[in-house]
Length: 120
Image 1 (cartoon, rainbow, N blue to C red):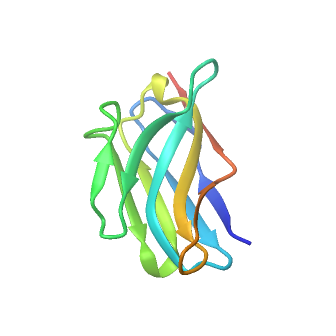
Image 2: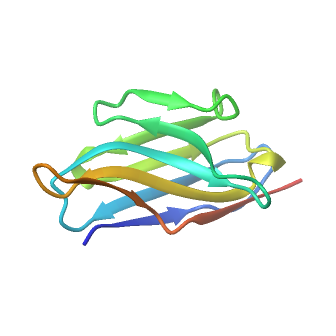
């Protein structure tokens, strides 16, 4: 069974920084793209950033220049470094990964979600 376990997050002041981590574990054959999403109250879940196994990255406009996604393939872990936090970054952040659990079987997995709160 595959699990994505998130850590980090919490409370930061506006202009401050937080780092999220997400480690995949279980019967993993290969991990393809990994990413971070977020969902604020009353809003739909939205993409924040993605990273391929080859470390090509994409960012939502709201994250560009402030957030950095990275991954450690040896540890099956993806990170999101969030700098210059704004009040509107407050949301529950979810990691996601497309994981091959066999030669021909891939599935999308989600982390449990991690609250990020930004105070004025």
